Length: 400
Image (cartoon, rainbow, N blue to C red; front, side, top):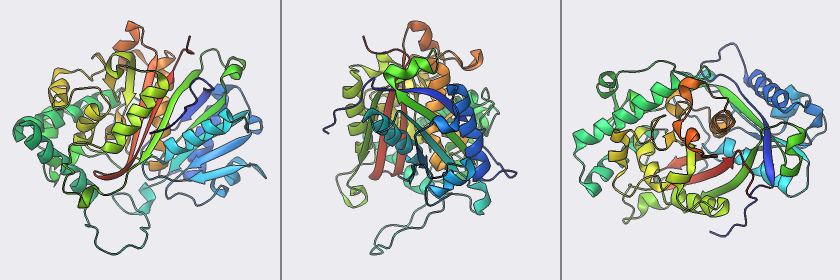
């Protein structure tokens, strides 16, 4: 993958994130205003100081008017975009590129989704017309295919693999219970997770992320200007996005134990950031744990574990808050739910808190005390074999 990257050319100087959950008393407008106000407040600016806006939403609006009206951005440049579940990350990527190009001095990336009012239990989208040959499966069913494939390829007993999935869900709910912005804030005993009602394949209810409402935002400026806004900005080290050929479901060679889009976007991001050993160099990672098998596979696709070994690392606690590399310290999609347009920026918000030393002590990742300064976010849109993938790396220190 060819990319030049914009390492250390832009920085985040303000962020905001609403509580995620059932926001019956608020619409998308309210959530956008809340997230934007927190972001500009933390940056010490006014909304009029922002030159341009990138809004990520999948189904809560259809143009820049979705943001210009509630924020009163009369006659300002507002771009609405969508890239499935990586929509919030795409808003961030485009806003960063706009500032790095010199087109604007300041930009805001903001994402929102209001799903609980839709009347459906999952994501609702208008699908484009196709030839009708695509399999019609639910998201849990599609991602459940990872489980038997992984067990078969690496010789893991199905019962033991269920323990691995249970451990992932338990970890993320443990972390989310310590996060006041999470939708689900209760620790869940492993026994309850393991015995929860089956949704699809081996996946129970606690193996699946929920549906929620929420919004998150970031203010981006040129890196050389960052200290005019705050003492501890986050520098953008890498942004990588990959859209696959979407051929997995009809490709006999695809074995459902990896996301090639993730492998390629991660490799590109590490090259941009100058990372040689992600497990040893990154302090924390927020990854797209839409389902527990997804997080397991991502540990290998992102280079955090050797192929066929991530299941052992999960059981050993490698990715716990006090582990070698904390994964989803904010609770992940499992605890936050998944308001599509906001999730990518919500992941970045946890980097904002952790890397700047503002995460509460009960959720602070241990690897920060070992001098690490980098955080990674990963967003996945689509399903195994036909997806898009985004990887970012941000850091609290500029490169030497």
